[in-house]
Length: 135
Image (cartoon, rainbow, N blue to C red; front, side, top):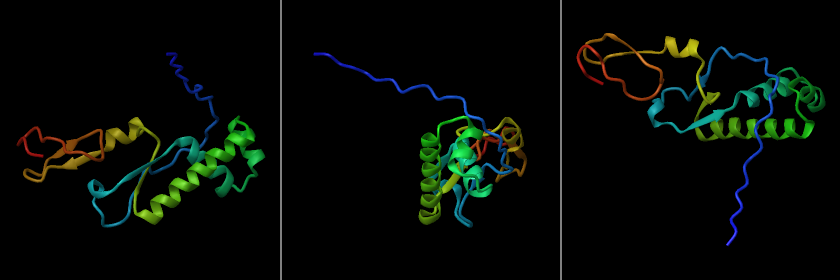
C-alpha cells in the first residue's frame, strides 16, 4: 500500500501596509466567552483595504501586494465571507493570528475580589490574581 502525503506550498511573502488601531471586534453587550470567534488574517484585511476602502481594481491591488490577481481574488473573497458571517451570526472578529506585542503588554484585567490589576497576554481566558489567588 502506497500512501502519498501532500504538503501545502509555503505562503509567499505578501506586501502588507495596513496597521489597524483595533485588533478585535465583537457584538455589543455579549460577553466574549459566549461568542464564537472568526480570525481575519492580516493579508485578508489588507485585501479589503485595497479593494474596498481604497477602491483599487483587483489587478492594481494584486500588484501592490506582490501576488497574482487570481490569488488576490481568492483572498478578498475569503475576507468578505468571514466578515459577513461574523455580522450575520453575531461572531467576534480577531484580526491576525496573534496580537502584536504592543497590544499584549497593554492587556489588563481587574481582579473581582481585591480589585488589583492583572496583566495578561490573552483578552479571553481566566488569569489568577497574584495577591488573592482568585480568578
